[in-house]
Length: 268
Image (cartoon, rainbow, N blue to C red; front, side, top):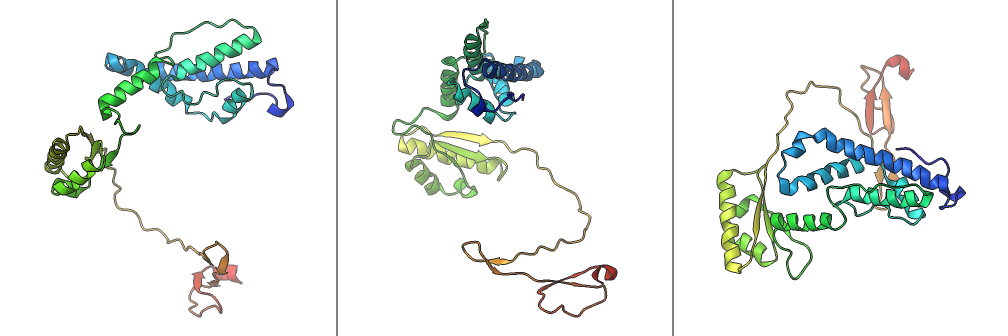
């Protein structure tokens, strides 16, 4: 990303050059966000209409977070405008709002754009989608508790009962482990425990991804690692002494706890 011409402490925050530099940086960032959306093209078209705006916002957010924003955010905060934090649900709208303010500061016209989600609709969509996926927010707390079930959950109903009784809102089944029969048994145990507790508990299944495995690995020379002894405060308690000796030499080097064979000429 472009960097401003001068350090912060040498310019006034109301210096027009500061604002113009920020506009250039944000315009570059905005262009990269729109390009990320355009690259997805048909993929976004295939998303269900109810989630298409959120999918476009996700594309913008990934492009937004692909760059180091720390200096930009520091400069925005320095002149007293939003640093673009907490804009995950409406990232393009946040960038546009800051750009609009900066244009006003330098006396430039700014055209209001249409974003997929705005400052009000974005958080509302997030809350709606989260409730559909994770269930309603519990009355007694602001967070939902998701628990990944261990393998024994398929055969131990008391374990599920205790998890539900202590507040589990979502049971996560990791499909990278166990098998279909175990997953069915886990789900049935959760449903039964939820009915008993008169609570709503979601069952979410995390599908296992591809398992990449390597073939035979060609043997290589081992690596000798030397590590001195340190106390609980990290101070050196005992050094490690390495003895170097030529090939064919078996005699121990005085004081050495570890030996390494090296070229005889090099030792000499």
